[in-house]
Picture (tube, rainbow, N blue to C red):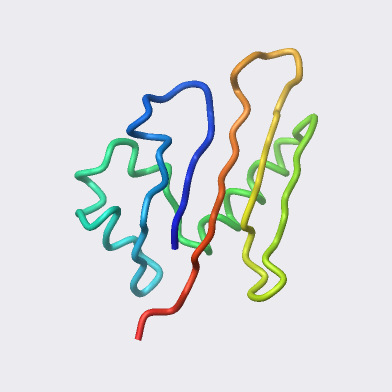
Length: 103
């Protein structure tokens, strides 16, 4: 899959789209490298972890959120959370696309 984080707090290297390979529900590669070789690797998720992230953010009662799910596979292909409209630059969003099983 391709995953991209959008926020106001990280350098361009962090927020550029990343190709993510998942095996056995673990991230194995990010842009062809071991996850620990990627800036902010702990902020990239498997699909199961994305659902956990969504649940945790919803539990925190955001002031605004938007989630769009793939009509083909049901995974979230876009999510946005603004926890407080009174706080600048704490919003975060993820874009997920190109999800496909590897054979």
